[in-house]
Image 1 (cartoon, protein in one colour):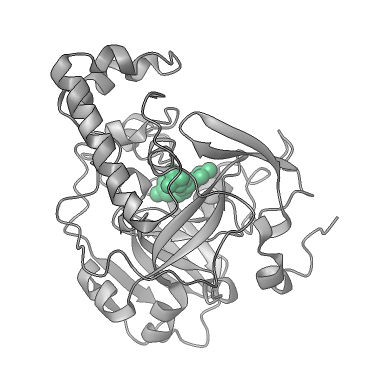
Image 2 (cartoon, protein in one colour):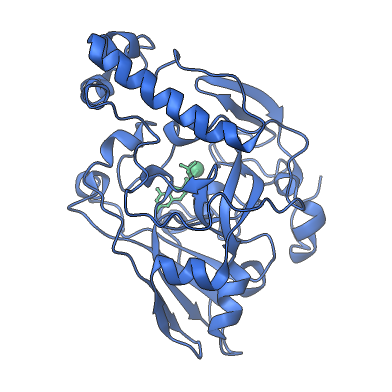
Length: 339
Ligand SMILES: Nc1nc2c(c(=O)[nH]1)N[C@H]1C(S)=C(S)[C@@H](COP(=O)(O)O)O[C@H]1N2
Ligand SMILES: [Mo]
């Protein structure tokens, strides 16, 4: 992707909005000059996307313009919960975090998922609560936000493929939703199901060998942990489509794939639920999938990671036990290799 638009790292909240405006205007400016496609095709690594990119540039659309128009905006930007800061690394550039994404429903290879989300219309959306629970019910996004509130948390993020980021998520602890719904005492796990919209999601159509829709799961003690977070937004605004609009999980001590994007169902169950990547390759993707530098992936080391600072700017850093959250969640996993 474009390396030409890299404003300085922002530190203060109002710079988030400013930065987005600068970015959008720059795109429009290039489009007007007819230079967009040329200026944006300089990296070469994404030739396949060049046509798509040119089309988006011509329309003045960038990776932050995929925030749905009808996403509710009340409560943003939310107050930051200072208990969840990330003092050891910088915040990842916002455009980078919404350009370099993983969302197989749109594509399995390209890291420019946002260009494939034009047909995806996340709203109307409902979350169904079902299974072993007293209050089986549905929430729309407004109801979720009104009932459970919004706060901002800075979390480390670590993909199993050894890239990482620091993201300011907006949302609420999953625990709040679970307590409200009152699971039965027989519930031991929570299963999540992502939205299944082949007409809107080209990756589902193209990669029809995958067991869609995406599904994930947690033990109840994990789901009830204060760190487990339902994200409705990031960087002070609702989630862009490619980052999982309308809601996704942020589980900072686990590899990224444990956090389903665009989930529509939460089911309380009495056994370990099946999960998408574990079903596809059980020896590579365990149910727990806690970030652990001491446990290599069968095909690569997990001792270090490529931390994404900005668009095209990655730094190699050591991976921390539980992604730096060992003090908080380590006690849940007595058998996790510690050295
Ligand atoms: N529904 C769904 N959720 C998903 C994925 C996916 O392909 N589909 N990819 C996962 C993986 S592998 C990662 S690393 C994170 C990526 O989140 P990001 O693209 O917002 O960085 O989303 C996770 N959640
Ligand atoms: Mo990932």
